[in-house]
Length: 250
Image (spheres, rainbow, N blue to C red):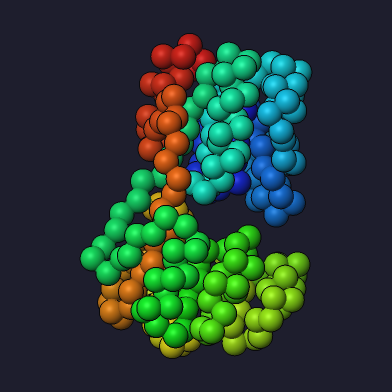
């Protein structure tokens, strides 16, 4: 049994490939929304957050022989926990890591605090494409600036943004990834003069954001992903068959 840590479009592609090659697997997601998407690709879905001990217990009960971590590049706590659990249970761990690209108009920063400091120096109308999870930190750090937050069009997510004080013209409720043209249109319509994003990689529409901003000469602040020391890392689905063969799983 293969245990796929998901919640990204990458994990859905991996699931489709495992189904096509008739590999038994469980796709693990953390949220109800993720479960809804996952069940469009497989019925064997587990929804919930697991501690290291819970991972070890579940993997033992499901006879898991391999873990593929295809979580979001910024879900580093999940990745670190999974690596610890794999080490303890002696189960091979593979990290599927998105590749990323930057352009000349980018400002690379280490965290949200630094992103807010740089944004304050660059402009007044800040377009956030970092999701809703860290929105409270941005609202606090960008207190005197006009924030436009692009977040999922889900009622509790919209409500949480409103509770932080954001009003209708500061909220764009849409699900990505977005094309370059869509990004450009939204940047123009909102009058944004700074874009803040995360180094999420190609599948997260990262390059489309950068290109749209570059065309409008809008600076982009990129929050770098935390670098982890993965035991096995792949960047493309085409690498998976060879790795599984080496591990005697495929």
